[in-house]
Image (cartoon, rainbow, N blue to C red; front, side, top):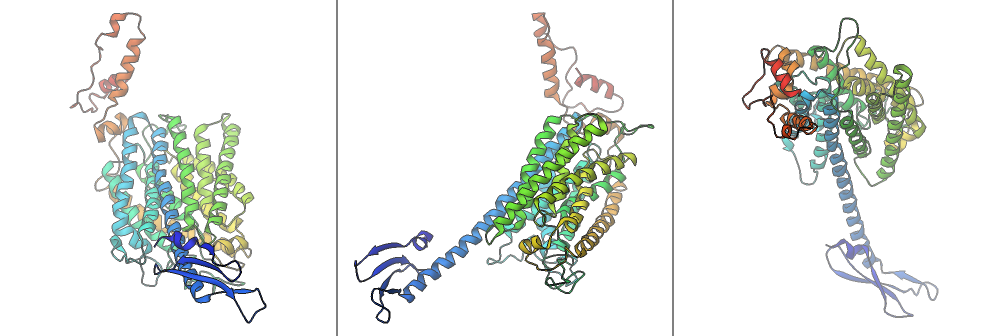
Length: 541
């Protein structure tokens, strides 16, 4: 039926003195008339509504408003899921701008493959492990594989779409840690396992209603008897995924970087050697896209728009903005203080550090606390980045410091800056878990458990890849570039543009039409150690 027929009631006066009547369409599509009539039991001139007719109309209005609210909630999740997926473009630009020019195509290829592989693996296995029914242990789901248990009245489609976008982000984080030296085949395998198994188990623990750490599990209360009252518990709070998504991806990337080893030339005997990025401009645009997408990431985690959720989402958006700005400004000052320059790359990572840090506590803290979280997140990022360099661990995108260590801090920040009043609004629990300090202990246990799971599963995964299909490309492949070896793609266009630029700058008009003395690589040309010097001459015109 047309909801406008229910929502808008057109009054008309049948009599100036006797009654005021209305017409409206009920839920059966029948046009009904109800009137305000004289009531002989009341004083003269007073009236009452025909209850039967009016009740049928209001029931129809209520049902349609409920349906409208459900549709708004679904649309909200879909739109926010699209924003989260758009973050893949941001990751791609950030990573493409941060690697050497000879590896740009390779890193972009891996970004698009992440999304494609996650779409299938999360559909087949991941979503069922994350949100399927378990055996009561709260450890792992065991239904809804390939959405096979879908029921028309309880659609999982929009939830699957939203959660798939999150799973793809978790896998893409790892790409930054293994950039410029990881074999494509190994990348395929670990992306499937992370999105189809490792990450979904963490999701089940923290976000599913049956998870042993989940704030949504009313049957299992961690470190308390119930969610309500003095001594009550919230279980682990990770609103949008500081630990679930970012720490999982960051710690996976850290393990991969350690097993893979540093890029050639990254560390000299005396000091680390910085490797030049291809385009800071591209990386900057990527971070802007990520910042925009983060509003879908955080605000969308309300999983609803009606029933007060819009107000919570608004606060989440404000706190997300403040933390990002604070992290940016913190690294701006720290880079000038420690390195005597305004390092744009550090500033970009400061933005991401603030965003990752606020992702878990965004609805349960006040705006001033969001600024503090962004500030401290920036310090955590820079400290952990310097620590990895000291330990000679090469993470080209600083994925582990940004996502892993700031993810840890963000999860713990819930117990440091969260308030009982904000928990009551966001989660509906009225207790003293925050003010008593118990929440910090719960968050700490959750962080340790997730790290243990991620490290315990990724170590055998990456070692297995190393000793079977191979995890790292050869030295020759790494030196010449993965674009050529993995994709047979020399930057011919770049070469041609350089030739044209040099020829146009000559005064001799005849030189413009001259044939370059250096021939373009043939389509069948495959560089190797014996001819790599010639190859480098060909593209370095």
